[in-house]
Image 1 (cartoon, helix red, strand yellow):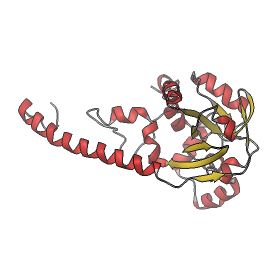
Image 2 (cartoon, one colour):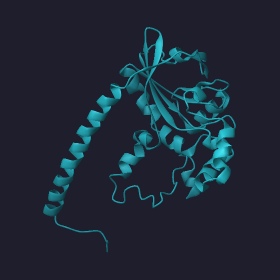
Image 3 (cartoon, helix red, strand yellow):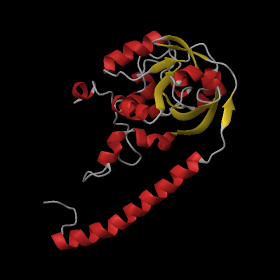
Image 4 (cartoon, one colour):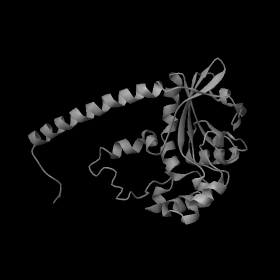
Length: 245
């Protein structure tokens, strides 16, 4: 017998309509925030960077691939990693389908990571992805934009102890905690005008949940995310769930 509140169809409709009003309010507020994002001041990126890509070395303007807008997901995959971050990987499963729709709206999408290109290509093949992925290996790009930080700084931060979740994720990536936590998941938006690239928006942490499509489904499932308190780290690479069941 369920422990959840049970009611009639009429009671459910009344409660659902009350909730619908709040959902519509949230949607309108989301539209307002989207407009405010577009009003942020633009920051010119003047330093030249060269990225390794499937098509050879490319500058930041060249990553736009002829379009005026560029969205970059900074995937946590450092030079010493043997595999990409499982959480980033769970989000990346939705990227392939989004790319053609973004391209149709004058937006190019790419991931950028600090691991060498060969590692990224091999991992992308394992995961069955086809979206563009560039390597910023041997460049200052990640550090200049404060997406990554030097490992020595991270080691000082961890002097008091390594959080268990960080230790687990580092192990999942085949690296040590300091190397894992020196990377960060960040989404950046750029505009290209008259040859100049501008940073227009950036977000991280829970600001990235919109890229994790499964959360939207779970939030509407009867048990919700059901992650516990504090939340458990349950995400795995999609080819690992069966092995762990």
